[in-house]
Image (cartoon, rainbow, N blue to C red; front, top):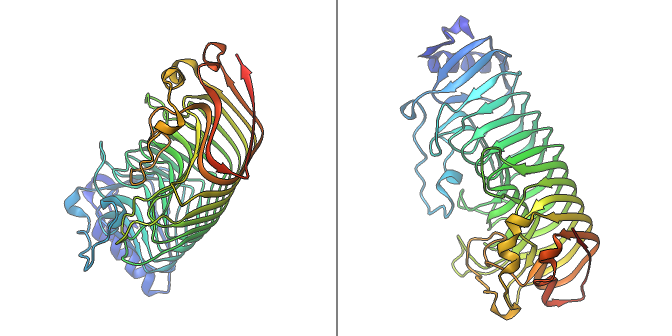
Length: 424
């Protein structure tokens, strides 16, 4: 890298030297662009096909000012998605329409910001065969790793710390694996989307997330909330730990599977998850927000398996809810143990609500707390078919257990919910 004039002195902007090294490597058919120890300040780095960016231990690539990064895309359509979801050009590493690229090496990528809003650290758009491994990303003001309409992706052994927005986003991506990562974020740790950001339907399918540690003040694993027009199919999450981000007070969400913009969500398997200080361990919502739709119309949410969940210090019941005429279907939940924290659950448990008084909120932003207090303290299910819950424990302080029912099913057919209520 220093052969092309990069200084790595922490003050000089090395963007031109970095791009020159990548261009030279690309012209020779590809290869490795190596960063020896040092702190490299840069604007947008345009990674090309068949290039490996190797950031050695002791090396940091830090984002320069907003003026140093590429301008946002000019779109000829209404994207109908969140601002942070739409734009990819303003980024530190920008991968656009390429194949066979890798960012690796044991070093660090620094978003170099102290608050949310700004460029992404790694932005991958319409690429094939991209690997990101063995690096640390810190201080990201936007999504730390953001993929859209890409496939054959591998994110392995990545540490994301002090992220001000989402940690890892997969938007309309196929054949992707995220493994052995730790994500500390103030927004969602890992989020799958199928947004209309590209002005067309892009499906999210064949995604594996495993062996990860997710800490957040928002939601640990979220599928949605930008959930349409593309669909979600064949997704697994396994062997992960979820927890509250240290230094924050909010109880984050645990597993949130949400279709509110017309997406079909089918064939999801989630297994072997531990959670601590999570609000609602499980939230499944089929709604009618209709972002990007001319006429808001729910999609579908069905064929979901959740097994082997251990959650301690929860504060809110598990929620499964469709809307009238559109039902959540075929959900199997088993081998689950949830204990509720007395102090944080007290308000919800002591607020008495009749099932008929729970609002539908069909077009509201979805999360487990969207309805306010619920009629049940452990498990609430509405507008659903074929929900089976078995071998499940719900543990709560004896002083709260009889304030309301542990389980309430409202407009639920062909279902059986078996929860052992344990008094503490």
